[in-house]
Image 1 (tube, rainbow, N blue to C red):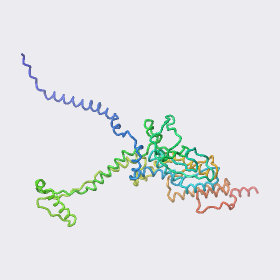
Image 2 (image 1 turned 120 degrees about the horizontal axis):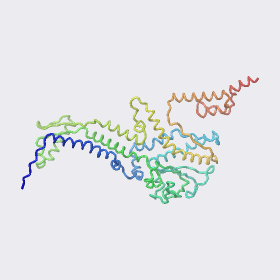
Image 3 (image 1 turned 45 degrees about the vertical axis):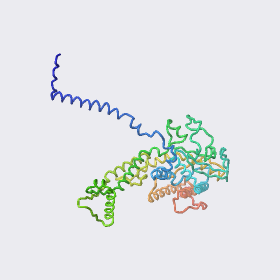
Image 4 (image 1 turned 30 degrees about the horizontal axis):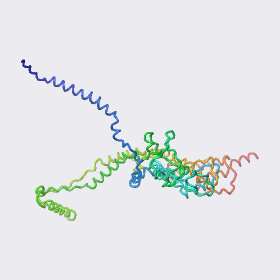
Length: 450
């Protein structure tokens, strides 16, 4: 049998080539082929989804709204800002005195406050409604409201309208809603014509049937960032609770603990030392024992909390100045942030409330005047708050325009007084019963004619 020849040991050059080729394959093959592919996968996104909706947890949403100020701010503040100042009712079929009377009556009855509360429940739960209360049979369709009839409104959330039901039949995918005739208000049937429903964020078709015809809560997108905010606050609380830690180095600690009654002896000794430290500001210890007091560091916590707050603000589209009461930083005045916030309120709160407000005003017109105007419309008050100086400048310009229009003979004295009184351009209200002089332009025209 022939003895195999011994292999020659690899030279340094061969070893260097093998290592070099292996590194090249690892860098250009593994990194670009494997890591590049992983960056384009959906595993991370898949694992970070809950796959269930918070909007279906009534108890959790209710408790979170009551206990956490941020969630209450996210739900309430945009609605309060949207309804700040009320609305301006416009109709050519109503006299100015009638519009003023109607606005005062609606303020006394709290109609806008009720609609605002409906908006808040809609944002919190993803659905709500305003019940029309009359003396009629609630199970029958709403009949025409006549002058002097009883009329009131009540804000309820979606769970109150389906108290004894968890789902509805006859779902129509084409209409994206459930077909039914009555709501169930704590066991009492309400015809659907007696409820002004309001739905939250419209979910995709894959999730829509799980919402039972309603929308999604605004808190749904807040879970990720809000959990980070809670964990950050809990971390700060723990750091404050253990900011200073006392460390005692006792000679023969292990042997003492192993001896009978050693644990009690150590505890008694520590209690004596802590009592001396609290009341005498001095500690008596053995010469070979040591006492060290360590303090935890707050480094990095402030920056982390700032990033978390920005994450929360971006999820709900509310600036930090509005959500946390933080003043604008640097050279920024914060006006851009407020403008973006105002645009969000206009599109998400006011746009959804406009129909419901007009419906309530129509019913109030039927109750107060016996008819419903055909050209009824509303206009929200501007959300931008002007300073006292800017507000006076605006009034001055408006008064100058009205006066120039009157002096040019383009409006009557009555119309001029109405414009001045309507916008409160003067500190007094002009008397509409007293005849005013003719416009200056009319006098000059008359003299020229003579």
